[in-house]
Length: 325
Image 1 (cartoon, rainbow, N blue to C red):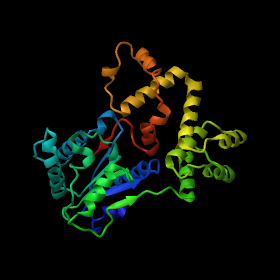
Image 2 (image 1 turned 45 degrees about the horizontal axis):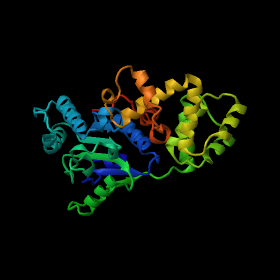
Image 3 (image 1 turned 45 degrees about the vertical axis):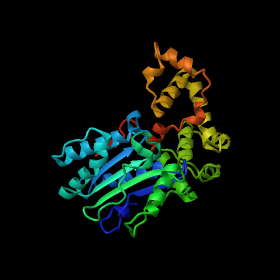
Image 4 (image 1 turned 90 degrees about the vertical axis):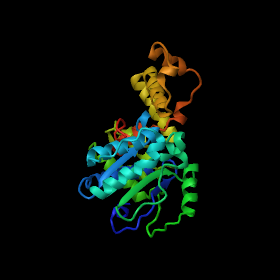
């Protein structure tokens, strides 16, 4: 994708980064952003936003407001900041164009836009431009789930696009190949001065979901506590082969370590922050007591929670700061 940021590339539309759930879109976007940040302020101005990084990150109005505010501050633009969604929809690209004309090309990276809240037509992509100018140089990269309604909206739009480009408008993230999986495991464990033997690596990569970065990073996190060779072999052999059972196993271990009430309350807080519930609307009185009460109302959080904040931290993002410029 780095090649698509170069001036020589003929990119005239926003670029979609698509893949199935757990295929590694956030990992790919994280690596992409890390590469771009090395050139931020010299070759271009970078803005990135990770949906689900915080409760406020789901709103397209917040995304566009922060982009305009950041460009105005960084580039010294004299434009008036829009306050309504209607004004934002009409003027946010004007901020981008002004910044690109007066300063440097602008690169915008938006991760997981399929998780945006539906307000303001966000999931109909009414806010996203159909085409981009050749000059000044502007690049927009958006990741989403392949085949979901939002991806279908974009495909339909591109099939009727009047402006054609030589560069691809879609980048597909496929399941990782064994060599890529091995490299991910090795680099992740190296951060903690850990490693697997060839036979241990073979056992891990033979698991059903070993082509998923989410599975591999979660599995490696589970293995970090084992330092003795025999213990590692035993843990690898009984490690669940799929993502959801693996997450359930890790949650069970955390319950044993920290107590069921602490883990239940933590998962409830993560869950409600993900679905953007306003806590004060649902919880009254003592928070712990309220959490305990709601935890016995039949919710199955293991299957529902995507552990997005944990994923983001593992992938290199901050779970508390969803965008920067």
